Amino acid sequence: MSGSGAEGTDAGKRPNAHLGSWFVRSGWSKGELARQVNRRARQMGALHISTDTSRVRRWLDGEQPREPIPRILSELFSERFGTVVAVEQLGLRTAHQSPSVAGVDLPWAGPQTVALLSEFSRSDLMLARRGFLGSSLTLAAGPALIEPMQRWLVPAPAQASDEPAAPAAEPRPSRLSGPELDLLESTTAMFRQWDAQCGGGLRRKAVVGQLHEVTDLLQEPQPGPTARRLFRCAAELAELAGWMSYDVGLQPTAQKYFVLALHAAKEAGDKPLGSYILSSMSRQMIHLGRPDDALELIHLAQYGSRDCATSRTQAMLYAMEARAYANMGQPSKCKRAVRMAEDTFLDAGLDDEPEPDWIRFFSEAELNGENAHSYRDLAYVAGRSPTYASLAEPVMERAVELFGDDDEHQRSYALNLIGMATVHLLQREPEQSTVLAARALKIAKKVRSERVNTRLRKTVDTAARDLRVGAELARLNAHLHGNHPPTPQPVLPPPAPAPPPTRHPP
Image (cartoon, rainbow, N blue to C red):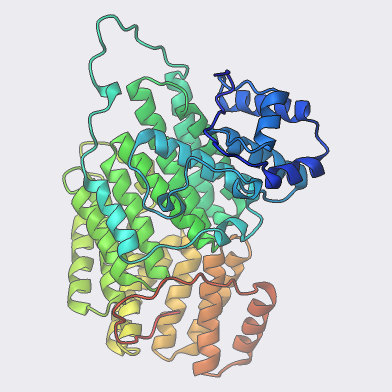
């Protein structure tokens, strides 16, 4: 066996016409392709790969190479032709052919998590012309989503890095110093701050690139404590990449990042972080009209972090539980969850342990905004109930007031202005609604968030359709549709059985 690491068993093999066609059109010689494969393998750290012209000839004759050769060839031909050349288009097989890899039912194991994070982030960076990567994915919902996520609660087997080293083993020094790890973590916090200020559209690729760099570090041998910190960093970056993808309308891509983030959080042993990732998945399900799935995800988050989450994190989970109940049309359970969120938030900051950066966003303003949106959603589900609209109004006003004094969370300010505008629509006060929508529009011009644009369009459309008032509203409507073309929404599998139809809020 040669040192290429690429042999396969190919009894009765036939020439690989697919690979041969791409190879001929590339203009490369066998020697040049071999050199490029070796160079890319070294960049990946696959130092055992040593390909030559005879090996390339055997691939063309039908030999199936082992990973990472198929992935390397896919990258090289994609870059050569400026279009996606998948492994299957080259007539090759990959090591990841099971359906689980294409969806969300992934193996809960460290090496596979690192490999999938690396592969997905690399593909996103290379192929993310708007819609390509998202269109190659499908959204999971219902049992196909919930059942795999339940495995987050299954205890992981003991890691070798947690066990005492054998007496003869020499401790492996870490290539990363403490200050370098601190810098990685502070960079993640900086990206999170930029997202809150500028929306998901501006820095998304930078976050994905940083995630890919961290997965490269995880592919190298690391001491246990260093590996856990790197997994935590990867989980936070993957969640943020998912959140930014969600914010700009790339829903399948967002879900994939969330799922991979949850796997990385499990490897890090960070249950509160895992609960936060599940809350982001829950928020996405509410956005997509799947409140039953959202509630299941939140209950998984609450149960999994029940003995370790800070009061602020628990309050955030209660607030998301209220949102799910509101969209399911269950007012008593919604109101109870709102009260639990308010009561638990009173203890925020009083915990002995310092709070992680990822939960800093859940301020008094955010608490009020979430609870107000729960009441607002109840009002729509209940057929534009004035009672629930009146409950939402003072809470939403408080959120708008607090966010108005916060330069860091401009997207949240815009979303709550829009929320307040919808409350006025429920109360049949179109003039006030138009004023608030105009204020939100000024922020939307500075924040690259498809979520803000979509909600603003829906709010103004609702006012124009249902109330038909005001020249100012007509001008605002024309301006919105002229500057922000609508983004097509993904199609989820239908729930079964379907609940009675409800009116969804704008």
